[in-house]
Length: 128
Image 1: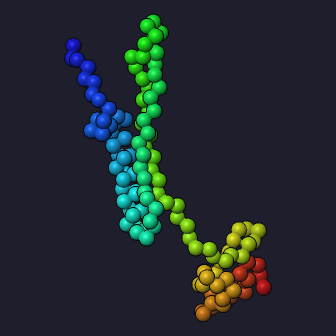
Image 2: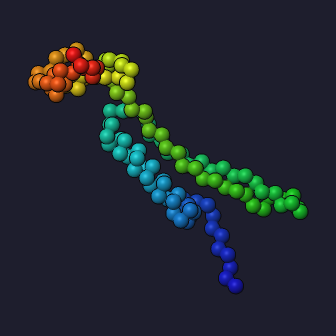
Image 3: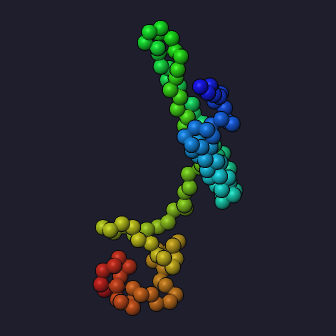
C-alpha cells in the first residue's frame, strides 16, 4: 500500500489545497492591488493582502491529545476606498438627478437642444 505523503503548510504547498483555488485567489488579489496602484498612483494609502490561518484543535476522545487540527486559510485584501468629488444633485422621489452635460453645474443650460427639451419634458421628467 502506498504511503500517505504529508507535506508542510507553506507557500509552495498552498497551491495543492482546494484544487489550486488558494493559489489562484492569492494571485488574483495580488493582481487587484497591482491594478489599483497603476490606476490610482496618486492614492498614497498602502494596499494590503493578508493571509489569515485559523487552527481549531480536534481532541482525540480517548487520549485527550491533539493529533489533528481543522485549519482554515483566509485571504483578505484591502485597497483604499474610491471616493468621487462632491457633485450637486437634485433630489426627486425616484432618486437623484444631475446635469449630464455639466455635472459641476446643476442649473447650467445645455449648449445644444436635448431630447428632453424637444419632448417638452422638464429635468425632473415631468411634462412642462
